[in-house]
Amino acid sequence: MHNKPVISFSTLLKTLMVASSPALLVLSIFAITGELDFNYFIYGYVAIVVLSMVFVVPFLSNISALTQYVYDLAMDKRMRSPDLSFLSNVGELSGALSRLQRSWENKRQEMETVITEREILVDTLPDILIMTNDDKTVVRTNRAARNIFGQNLANRHLHEIIPNESLMKAINAVIEDLHGQEVEFFLEDPSPRDFHGIIERFPIPSEGGISIVITLTDITQQKRVQRMRADFVANASHEIRTPLASIIGFIETLRGPAKDDAVARDEFLKVMADQAERMSKLINDLLSLSKIEMNAHSAPTSKVDLLRIIRAEKQHFEWACRQKNVTLRLKLHDNLPSTRGDDEELAQVVRNLLGNAIKYTNPDTDVVLSAKLTSALPDDQSMRNLTRAICFSVEDHGEGISREHIPRLTERFYRVDTARTRKVGGTGLGLAIVKHVLNRHHGALTIESEVAEGSTFSVYLPVYDDIASESEKARNSADNDELSEVIP
Image 1 (cartoon, rainbow, N blue to C red):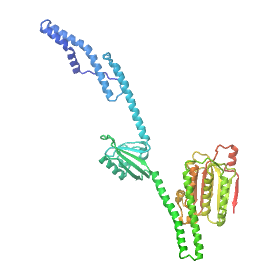
Image 2 (image 1 turned 135 degrees about the horizontal axis):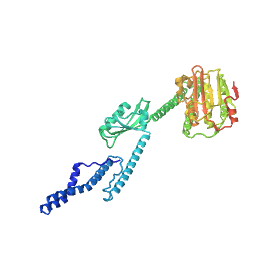
Image 3 (image 1 turned 180 degrees about the vertical axis):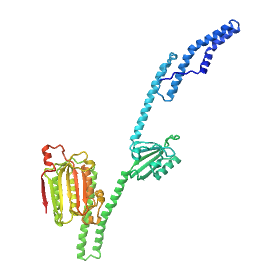
Image 4 (image 1 turned 30 degrees about the vertical axis):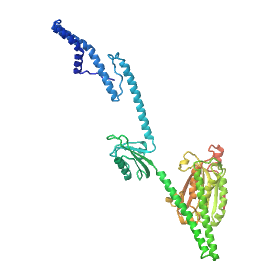
């Protein structure tokens, strides 16, 4: 809606004077030459002024409306084209105004679309984006920044949000010399994170507006992987160096002082053989782990009978059980469904868990190995879309594991008791291999342990074909009869 145009008296007077000036000039000439009486001069001029008003007032009204319309467009207001009835015939002015209106609306829509797209683009960037003025007061942020540091960030000082001196120094350097800076820093709050920051000067800073653009990339996982790799190399080197140094030392001794000592030679050769076997196991485990990691992103699709693997693997531990007088009990549900997997990798899982249980259980006790179909699934990402899974468990009666150690047991070379692990021949990689195999198979591992009572390691694997008949479900339910096998 347009307001009714207002014509000031001064404008009207000036316009009337200009419009009537030619007639006034003619009347004045006639009056001076005596051809027109003075009274008729006055009457004639008044009549001309009144007649001029008939044309001048609508003209001024249209001009005023047109001026207001252009002003409103300049102020980015949405207005209808004015009704220029008096000027409509002057050079198709109304048509030109309509075209101007349509063009302005199109340009406005285009600009709004561009602005909206840029807003969406900035908000959907995965990296954190924070824009400040020279006082380091936050002017604008994107969604990633708000998700990490909170929703109400605008008009707050950056140091309140990110209290890090390295970042502040880099920003100050950009403000002073106008050159971009990069910085890495660590934040404890709101959660421990490593960031890589890029600070750039905004091309066209404005007073109170954006002058500094800060882009932060979360490199926590990258740093963690780097630390894990460094730790892995250091641990692997140490594990290999220890038996190797021992073997070299014995060889030097046999070549020197014990060269003719048959008893020492036999004893040293036995120790050297043990150390060589330990080094061989370590290298084999490292190769296995490397192979599993290479195939980590290609899930196996073969149909695997887990019961067959369990029965085959338990044969390898009969001698170890007799050495410690350990009884290995198998509780397997008959007709257990198949799972998707790689035979050799799942055999490694059974081998490592069963071998650990026998190594760490107390003599004259039982190790119970069970397999069943269950709907009681652990709280694990890989299990969230499943309603049931195959559960394979190994229970021992050893010294148990303290609660604080359990979350780290699957880390490479992590040992609860280093001396004891090496004494029983462990490499520190067994549970890491189990974890990586299960990741590839979309399975899960749970560990339950009580100090002085023992531990239970449970593996959960998806069913190969989870659309089973009712009869198959009945055969595979958790309440089915069990087959019990005992290895004395």
